[in-house]
Length: 263
Image (cartoon, rainbow, N blue to C red; front, top):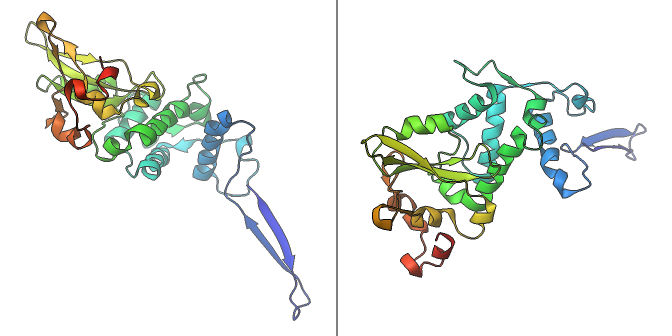
């Protein structure tokens, strides 16, 4: 934070007027690789500091109550993409941080858990990686509510196993920073539902092909080596083309300019 002090004297006044103005919090960095951690510091300070001039704030960093912390995370998405996090998405994040709880309102997130624990892939690195990916490559379908996103593997299976074959959902990877994947329902030889998942797609993939084209053209080899799309209905029951069709390339099949990235 920058604090500017000045004194002004008017002709009619003998006594000078002392003025002070302060900037928003500032973090000095020497390399762009430090930007992510710098922003984490600013977020924490803005969220919890009661004194905007408290230069000793990080000497004894307070923990963040979950309701306030969850609201801050939602605001990050809202400001970047114009769509925040819903209650289910926040609950998944709370479960990731605290494990299963009856109520998360009394839970607190420490500064270490937010930005220090977990080696290079801290919670903030994971969350910010998703935010950057959504803003850069997925904003349209995120704003339409087509990405469930923050859902655990366990919850995903509970949701999908009750649905018909070809139902799929989109979720953010919990293990790959800045990754998104999809899972779908297959029916095995006994007639029981089986949940299949692909490896996460990252910016390496998304900078070459829009994600909606990946969903559109994704195929697997079925019986007799016949390629078939396993993705038919976006959870809970929206036909895939109805959900994503308005963003499709005008060309389809082998004429689609993106098909080479799928095969």
